[in-house]
Length: 152
Image 1 (cartoon, rainbow, N blue to C red):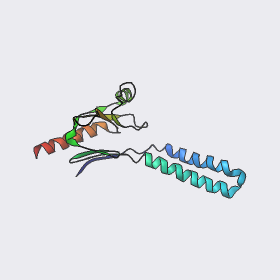
Image 2 (image 1 turned 180 degrees about the horizontal axis):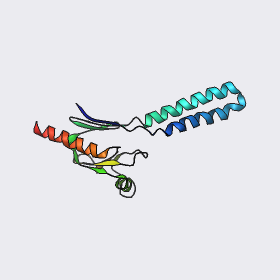
Image 3 (image 1 turned 90 degrees about the vertical axis):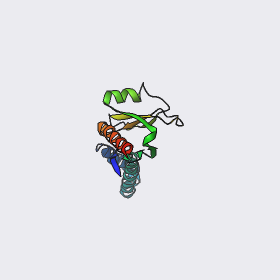
Image 4 (image 1 turned 30 degrees about the horizontal axis):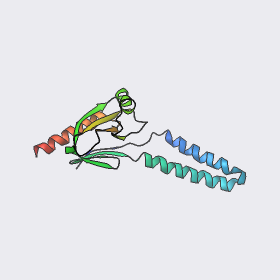
């Protein structure tokens, strides 16, 4: 069962950077002729496009037993209180209030986040900082899945 799934994809404006990178690559090889410049435009745009796509492929998923954040997976019983952070609270937590031991799935283009405590005594991580476009929903779904697990 998958209760929540959010892909932290990059904003559409970043695809302009992909086009710009291809254009710059083409300009660099323009002295060699139009054919090498055309190939450089395509290769440059594809390479930067792959990098942008991979960066934006991070997911936040909640299943019946685990929280998946990027490539990390944590059992729900190892997690403590979850709190939705507005843009100002999220900025403060990722700047001056940050703990260097925290696990952070940080996407600068997403201003809001969720702070989830870690209660596992064997884990030195004090909390998870997870960028989310809908942090209140993440907190709500985590609470609902925990209630459901506690009931049976």
